[in-house]
Image 1 (cartoon, rainbow, N blue to C red):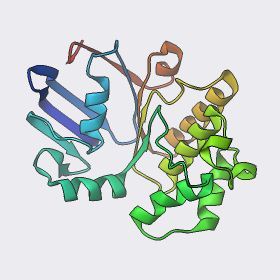
Image 2: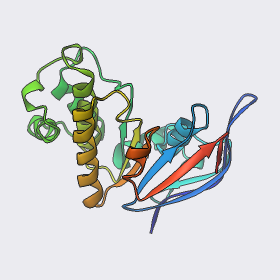
Image 3: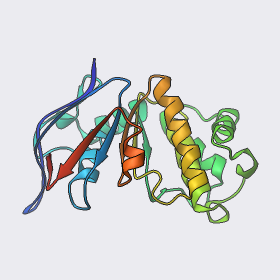
Image 4: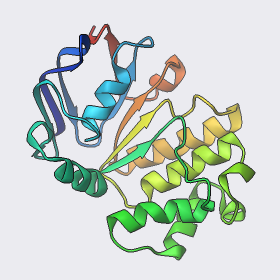
Amino acid sequence: MSLIELNGVAKAYGDLLALDDVSLSVAAGEWLSIMGPSGSGKTTLMNLIGALDTPTAGTVVLDGHDLSRASARELTQIRRQTIGLIFQKFHLIPQLTAIENVMVAQYYHSLTDRAEAFAALERVGLAERADHLPRQLSGGEQQRVCVARALINCPKLVLADEPTGNLDEENEAQVLRLFAELHQGGTTLIVVTHDPAVAALGGRTVKLSHGRIK
C-alpha cells in the first residue's frame, strides 16, 4: 500500500525549474534514500512530500490527502498529524532547553507532556542534557534533539534531510540505529543523503539529476 504518490510533479521558482515531471510511489513502511548532487532538486522534493510547499504542476498525495490542492492551513494540519521532520541545520529555538524544544512539537500536535518529552530525549541518549540550551550542546547532541522532536508524536512518515551531515562517527551511528528501529517498527522513512553508506541502509535509492529521477 502506498503512503506517498507523486504523479508528473514539477516545481518552478520563476525561471528555475527545480523539479521536472517527477513520478514516485513510496510504500507504507518503506525506507527510501534520495541522492543527487547539490541543486538536483532533493530539498524541493522533500518540501513537497513534507507539506511545506505545493507543486507548480502534477499531484502529491500523502496518506490519502492531495497536498497539491490543500490550503496552507490544511498543509499545517497534515504536517502535525503525519510527518516528523529532521533538518540538517537543526532549527532549534535558542531560548528553549532541549526538553522544551521537544515539547514544542507536542504543543502544536496536541498536549505537552514533559515525561514523554524526557523519554524521547532518553531514547536518543540525552536524558542528562534535557535542561541545556542549544548553545550548550554539541552539533551531534543538537541533531539528536531534532530526532527526538521529530519522533515525539509517533509520525507515520519521517523525512530526514542530510541527518548525519554534521555528525561525528559515534553520533551518526546512534542516529542510524534509531532509524533502523523506526523502520523495523513500521515507520516510513525518506532520507536525503550524500553518503552512499547511509543510502545503502534503505531498501531503495532514488537518484535525482537536474530535477528529474535518473
